[in-house]
Length: 568
Image 1 (cartoon, rainbow, N blue to C red):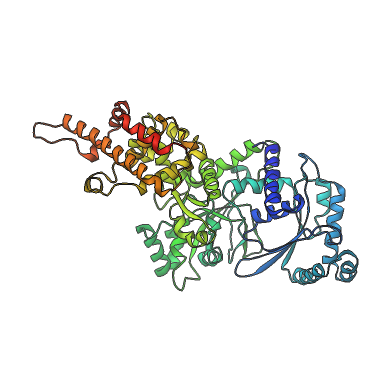
Image 2: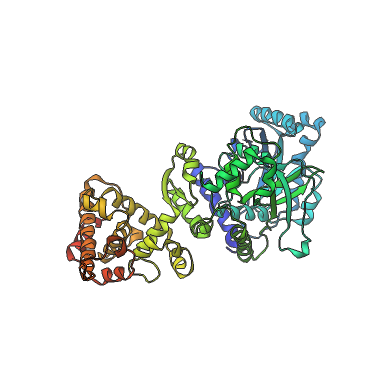
């Protein structure tokens, strides 16, 4: 995205909210931002028009430990490149006045707030502000007026201009929004930092108490802390058992027994001699460590772990595309190069790339959860189901299906997808896969579900073929659909009982034909002792896929395909 395209993306999102919620655009802008930036904003109250005290929205957040309130004043424009005017900042200054000066509040409510309901809300918010439980925000998609913004530094208001919004939108597109709450690491005496001239990004190393992470995770039900991690909990592996045992039985040995945690953030600061504050923390390495210890009973208050904290540069300026790629490359390299106690799979490494994030977002619009990271559905299924989300495909399986749909492709194909899946996630193979339109990927997912529901239950299939033929079968049916003149991306594959018999016949006949090809190759391979090619070995040799593609496909299969998918 260029800067202008990023601006237009924001306007498009606001238009969608305005249309869907029947709100004016400047109010839809505030709602869109709050839902993107904050985790579950609650009790959103919108105020519009004269006599509202210059507030456009009130809402609160609740992290299970404390409730915080937010008061937003906003300015929205559809004009790209516009800089915030001085009048905007004058309004912000006036907006802050009653919160800062108690003696002005009665007059403010009398003269500036016309509705009784709004006055009641203001009185509550004044109290919350005095107690440190409310924040003032100025939000605009205009560009920052540096001189004017600097003049407001003394005021307790957080300013969001287009530059800050753009950075948040890019994080959102990376699957790293909403923001995480601040993490406080207690009793941190020394923080080691390399000379800024000697490292590309600001970095610090500290030995932190694990109890701080455990308590933080207890208030993070959606695991936002791990949003940039390529993996979640891998379960009760041998390594994870050892991590848990050390934490439970020898907590003082943990610091030198564990590889540590790597964490990205917006910023960090040694607030006092003992507290290290981390803004918007994201763990990119050490997920297994933290998931292994999070449920240990009576956790140690003393166990420490080495934490490497890395401040990731923001993306602002004209060349957004280049800066974003540079930033993503830094994040990806940190994730990949970090020490790994558990082996990392090739498909884990692409969990946060643009292609899989695009799939994640597209499937979400269809109410399916695309599982980019192992075990993510099991961790979040209760919440996701409550919100109407259904279980979708797992990343590895989806990539295998995409590859299988290209039967006969030198880099892809069903045989490679079944026997050499790791080779699909690199080089020319993955380049081809990642260029697949998301609508086609979704169609492939629906087709695989349809085929699975119509698989035969015969002894031959169950005992000899299942596990070997499933991906080649999928690839053949994709090939038949193409030969019948249809485009996979244009078929919806609905679930329709009256239609299942046609599909079942096509599936059954396709299995028989693949099996016949196997039997033919097995006969040719018989040795002097009568031993011949096994099913397992047949599906290991990619040359057999080429032979299948080159063979004359029975016209009945193509006719069955045309009949089954006509009209879709």
